[in-house]
Amino acid sequence: MIWIPTSSGRRFCLSEPCAADIEPEDIAHALAMICRWGGHVRDFYSVAEHSVLVATAVENRWPKRLDLHLWALLHDAAEAYVGDVTAPLGRLLPDHAAVERAVFAAVAERFCLPPVLPAEVRVVDAAILIDEAQALLPAHDADALLPVGLPIGCEIECWSPKCARTTWLAFFERLHTGYSEAGR
Image 1 (cartoon, helix red, strand yellow):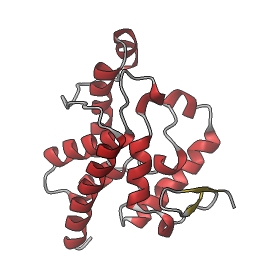
Image 2 (cartoon, rainbow, N blue to C red):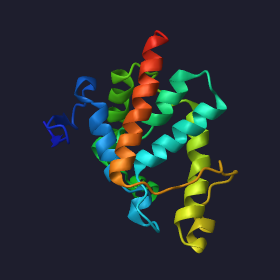
Image 3 (tube, rainbow, N blue to C red):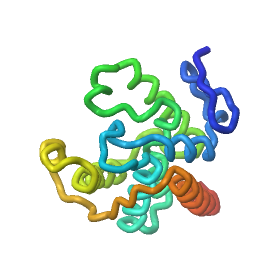
Image 4 (cartoon, helix red, strand yellow):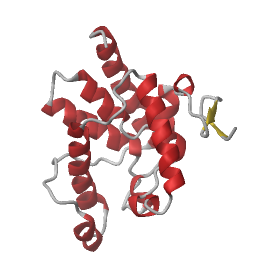
């Protein structure tokens, strides 16, 4: 068994991820401590803040789709257990990708979500990438790395890890409660 310790004191098995071992508090804590873009940004910008921005944008575009809102907040939850590997490095690490997919499936199971990330979330995630690049990367890198499309226009605030954790958890509680009450 290959495992990592989590912030709550659990042992999370990477070789056989189990939905029962996934806790929102662990996700929030780890994502708040992980910097996007491999840390190569002007200021610390967490995966947790990114996830809240994606969820907020999805919620604004599809206000009645609670499943989309929750998936948007959790779309990078596997990174709480496997880290945020930059896309270029990820292409060189097929074993990492396989582990991340297994953790992603456990996250979906844990929160009773469909096992495939909805296209709406992927579209918003890509658009926010443009906002991030423009706000956080040197101009020459932002121009080279920008995906095709238009930015969302969200404000990147570069929250502290404590703020990112607290905000992510509050957003999760609101969404998860609404999702559960809707009978999903």
